[in-house]
Structures are given as structure tokens and as C-alpha cells.
Amino acid sequence: MKTKQDFPSINQKEALGKGPDGRAIRVLIVDDSMFVTKQIGQILTSEGFEVVASAADGQEGLEKYKELYPNVDLVTMDITMPRMDGVSALEKIMEFDNKACVVMISALGKQDLVKKSLLLGARNYIVKPLDRTKVLERITASIR
Amino acid sequence: MRVEYINPFVESAYNILTEVLKVEVQRGELYLKNAAMPMLGVAAIIGLAGDVEGRVLFDMTRETGIKVASGMLTSMDMDPVEDLNEMARATLTELANMITGQAVTKLHNLGFKFDLTPPAIFTGENMSVSDSNFEALIVPMDLPMGKIEINVAIRERA
Image 1 (cartoon, rainbow over the protein chains, first blue to last red):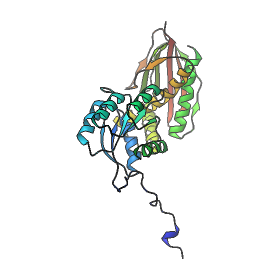
Image 2: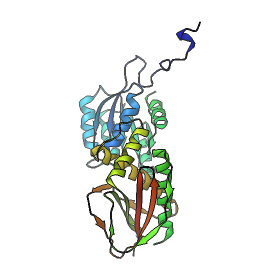
Image 3: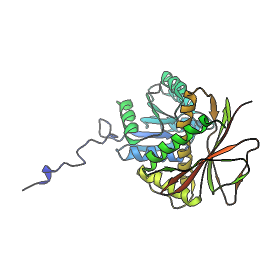
Image 4: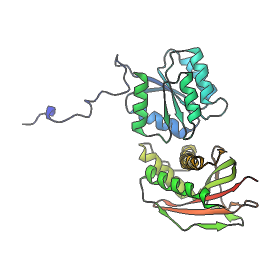
């Protein structure tokens, strides 16, 4: 007779969004597009990450980071945004917390700004259009 | 208008629509318009300025707009939209961003340098668009959700 153990379980795979202590990794999403915020949020929460806040521009992102600190583990940062762009917000976040883990979200054709962000301390970058595999791959690589 | 400008938009629109909506896309016959032309009801507009200048419009009916936004959302495991609400508009903006992003990379690789404005979404009845001293090329794309007209008016800066 077959028992439950004979069948692979979808729950066997470790959720990517859990840290080594089993606690969910806390994410701040900074993006001026409601669509992208929701898309990243959906991908991350489905893997066990916890989206603790989102911000619609760099200024708000910086303020929320300071407010949440140290209860935030990862930031996804859009590059082109009103008020304060992602590169300036990254710079200010790194000044405030040099261990911050920031992943840049870039439109196509912004290689120079991506390069600048990496020099300023961004851990990784993802070029739009976003897809599930790309987002999870880059984000898990940057939190390890 | 030189055909080099429009081809990247047509190719990217075809690629992105097929990839994102996971539906069959048919490219209709391209046509040229000089006079003011009626718009369908929902349009995303993106401006270009640099070596070349002008604008690109993605025009569709309200019903198609809702269906396209829903198709894009559900293909990414998100909830569809019932109306042309904020989420629907953000989704269509992102679609326009994806298409122009890819087209612009192609144009940059051909040596044209210019900047883009962020997309704006227009909605309304009985709208029309006219461009003085510009020819507009229109490429209809037929989807199961309806028709999207890609309306490109670009010229070299004098």
C-alpha cells in the first residue's frame, strides 16, 4: 500500500523567504509603479518573505527604511522615480546603514546607473520586465 | 517618417504582448495618417526627445484595456481587474514601459540617442489626436482581447 511518504510533497522545498533561523525575511519595496510593487510583493510573499512596507518614491523609501530599521532585511529599489531617484535613495540608505541589503530594479538601458548603484553598495540588480525566476534568483543571491 | 523608427516598436510590441499575455498576436496592415485621428478610448503615451523627437501612443478601447490589464495580471498570478481602476492603469503603464523599453534599446543600438518621458494614460470618449507637421504611422495589433493600435510619430530633430 502506498503511504503519503511515497508522494513528493510541494512543501518539501524550503521556502526561499525564510532566514537561517526560520524567520521570514522582511522586505521594503520602493517603486513608483503600483503594478511592479504588487508584482514583486506577490512573488516574494509566495516564497515566505514578509513585505513590511512599500514606498512610492526614493524619499519615502529612505524615511521608511529609517523608521523600520533594524527590523528590515532587504530593500528592492526602483531606479527611476519622482522626488528622489533610486540611486540617491540607495546612497542615503548606505550612509545610514552600511550593511543595508539593497537590490536595484532597473528598466532596460540604464546600465550606467546600475553600475553606479553597484559601486555605491547595492548588492544586486534586476532588469525589467520582471519574472518570478529572475526576481527570486537575484534576491536570494543577495541575502546569502 | 523613416521605417527604422517604427520597426523596433512593432517588433517589441509583438514580443512583449506575446510573452506577457501568452496569447496569439496578429500584426495588421500598417497605415499612415496626417490629419487628426480618432482615438479608441484608453491610450498610453510616451514622449521621445533627443536626436529624434515625437511620441508613441498605445491606443485601445476601454473594454480591451481592462481585458489586457487583466490578462497581464493573471499571467503573473495576480488578481484580474473589473474596471479601469488605478491598478488597471498601472498595469497598462507598465506594459507600455516594457514595450518602449525594448524598442528604445534597439534604437540606441542603431545609434539613435534620445530620452523618454514616463508613460501617461489618457482615458475618455470621443478623443482625437493630431500632430502638426508630423506623420503618424499606425500599426494595429490584433489580440483575442481586441485591437491595440500602436501609433508612432517620430522625426529627426532639425
